[in-house]
Picture (tube, one colour):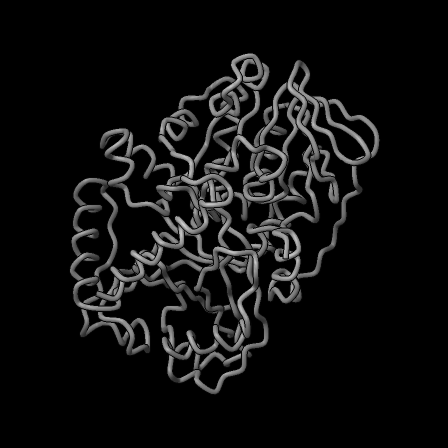
Length: 442
C-alpha cells in the first residue's frame, strides 16, 4: 500500500472528522495567481503563517492538497504541551544554555498564542488547561523528579510534583508510579482549532485553495508553485506540508521519517466515571520514549493514543489492539467499546528536534540554492507540534517581514539525514526504536 493510500485509510474513522461539521469549503486552484507569499500546507503552521503575514499587509495564497486540517493538524491527540519532543539537553549541547532558554520561552509563548487566537477569532475548540506527565516505575519517577528540579532551576519552569501517595487523586490507574502536573499546558479539539484558524485567515484576505497539491516548485524570481490546474507566483514561499512533501521536495525528505501513530475514542463514559479516571480532566502521557497519551473529551469519552508503525500498513485489528492498551492503563475500561479508531503520519527528525530553515541551506546545487533563498520550510515536529507549529508559522512571518532573529534561533539546530537512504532508513529507525523500548521497560 502506498503512503498516501495508507493515510486516506487511517483518516476514515477519525473522531474529530465524524463529530466536527465543516461549514466552509474552498475552491481548488485554477489558472495563475500572483501574491507576495505562497504557502503549502493547510495545517496549523501554514495557517498561522498566513494569518501573521496577512496582518502585516502581505498578499498570501495557501495551497492544501486535500482539505484544511486533513493531516496531523486535524487528527492528532489534541495535547498542547510546553517544550519540544527532544529534551532541552539536546538544544543545550548544540546552542548553549542561553539559546536553549530562549527556545523554551518560545514554546511557552506557543501555548499563549493558542489562547490569544481562540479569544481574538472566537474559536470554540474545547480548550481545557492541565497536563500530567506520568512515570511508569520508580526509576522513571526519579528521572522525572530530576527533570522537574532542573527545569525549575535552569529555566524557571515550575510544575507540581506528584508523589506516589498523591497519585490516586490525579489518576485512577495502577500503571503509574508518580508524576508531574503542568497547569500551563492543556488540550483541545485540534480540528476545530485548525478550521477556526482557516476562517480567520479567510477573513483577513488570505486566498485558500483546497484539493490543490503542489506538484512542482520552480526556482526563480518569482518562484512558481505548480498544481495540476494552475500555479502561484510569489516572491517568498513556505513549505509546511511535512511528510506530504516527500516526493515533491526530496531535499527535505531525508531529514524526516514518516511514522504512523494511532488513536482510539471510547464510547461515552459519562461524567462520573471520567472524573473518577482523571479527576482534574487533564491531558496525560507517560514519560517513556515510545509513549502512550490520553485525554478526556467534552462528551466524556477517553481518547487514547500510542503505538507506532514504520511501514505504510495499518496495523491489523487496530481498534482491538488499542482497546487492550487502553484497558492496560485503565482496567476499569476492559469491557468498554471503542467507537472510533484512526491514525496518521507524523514527521520525526533524527534527534526529535524541530527542523526549521531555508530550502537553500539544504540544497547542494549552489546555483539552485541561490534561487531558493526565499523558500522557508517547517518540519520535524516529531509528534509534539500542536502548540509549536502555531508559533513556527509566526516566526516565518517575522522572518519574511524582515526580522529573522527568532526563526534563525531554531534554524541553527543541526540535523542529520536518516542513514541508508530511502530504502534502508526504515530498518535503521526500527532498530533504534527497539533499543529505546527496551530502555523503557528495564
